Amino acid sequence: MHSSSVPDSRNNETTDEKQPNPLHPLNIQFLALLAPFSVFGVLARLGLSALANYPGQSIFQLIYPQAVGCLAMGFCLALKEPFSRYYPPAYTALTTGKQATADFEIRLNSLQSWLNTEGVSRSVLSSVIDGICKTVFTACISLASIHYGMHLAGLVSPYFHAANPPSRVSRHTISALSVCIYAATIPAYYLLPRSYRHQATAALLFSFPGTLTRYLLSTYLNPVIASFPLGTFAANTSGTALLGTFHVLQGTATHPLSSKSCTILQGLADGYCGCLTTISTLAAEVLMLKTAAHKYRYGFITWATGQLILLAIFGSLVWGGDISKQQTCDFES
Image (cartoon, rainbow, N blue to C red; front, side, top):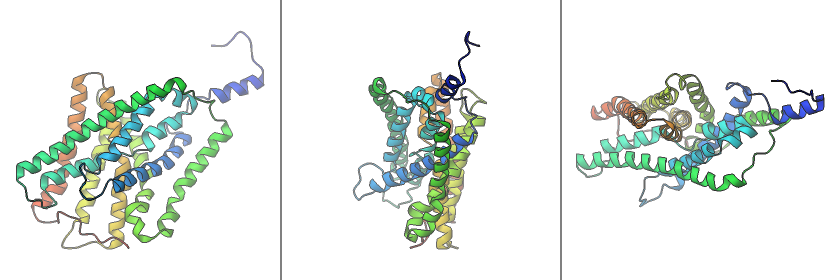
């Protein structure tokens, strides 16, 4: 539609700044901003897990990053309109890039409970109950955290007003800084102490590739089946399969890997797999599906497929005695 009066060029420039043209999902502004948020998401996840790892803990440590990540997801979902109006890549980066959650960790942790990899003196039934409790507890906390995040967003939304969209110069500056932040993970890996590599810096190297893979899968595959987010399912499933493979390699008892190989595998597991898989997006998609049948089908198939994959890759080798139940890796120090 054209207006009855033609504004002057100055008004045109102002309008363009306030209402920029919609960006393609693969625009560099989207892709670049995913990089730093991937780095921050990995740091948040590893930091929360380390903070919650203490003797005598009442709740398993992995639940803390899942809860915080899902709360942040719910908050951002409820404020999607002002975030998207301000700068669409910012909303995408917050909900896709800054992932403090990782689906693979919960799946592996549940399987380890069923297999009793810690060698705790208990019956098979107790091991099964322990694994089921972790799965159910994670699902409940994740869904509750998303709802609570939406509730908090509702409290602040009357006072939350999006600013004018950033100018073209600001957008290009943000993209350049985003690339620089991710590029800084390379010198961080080599310059920081070697003992940090398997704990964090190796994971940071592989954070953005994992997020980018999930973003591309979601962009192209999620629209295929409206009642089943195929992209997220593919991301969680492939990430789980890769994690099982890496864990098997780290548990090889007959031919232990070198410390450098172990460090890279840990970085791939925490960084690439950690950003490729997601609990918060899965929980949000379950809530947004239209019917209860679609919700339960999507949630159950995702969970069951991941557990079967880990059981086939990791469980069969543990039962066969081909690998150790615990990691045999010696990391760089």
